[in-house]
Length: 209
Image (cartoon, rainbow, N blue to C red; front, top):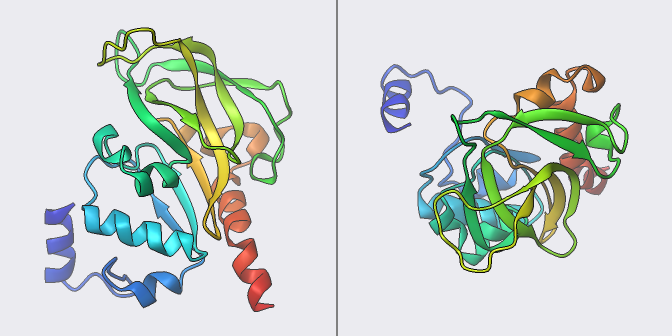
C-alpha cells in the first residue's frame, strides 16, 4: 500500500482521510475496519489495539496480520484468539470453498438461522477463541495446519465468524480470506457489513445519547 498511499498524497486525493498516527483522530471513530493484510506496521497494529481497548469498534475481515505477529498478545486479542495460531490453506488451490454452519443467532447475521449452511473460501487461521468470544459460524470439517508439523495436534474446526470484546471495544472477526459469501448471501440481503458496523458502534452511540 506504500505506493498507493504515495500517489494519493502526491495528487491530493486524500481529502477526508486520516493517518493511523493520529490517536485523537482514531479515537473519534465509531468503527475501524481492517481488511486482508499480511504486513501492517507494528506501530499501527499497536495503535489500533489501544484505540479498540478504549471503546472504538473493530471489523476485521481475513488476516489481521501474519501468524508470527499474531503471537503477540495485543494482536491475538484483536483476533479474539489465543496463541498458537496456524495457517490452513485448502488443498488443490487457494480459497477453495468449504462448508460452514451457523452456530448461534446474532443481529449481525439477521436472516440466518442456527443450522443454516453455506460455503466460504476455506483458507484461514486455526486457533482457539478466547473466553467470552462467541463463535457465530464455524467450519463443518476439522483440519490440521498446512505449513507446520505439530506433534499431537488434534484436528480443529476453524471459527469463521466471531464477536467479542477487547477492553471496552466490540470486535467482529471474519476468519476467511474473503468475506464475499457474507456480502452476497441472499438471507443477509446485502446488509452484513451495515449490520456489523451498527452493532459495533452501538455502545458509543448510546454513550453519546
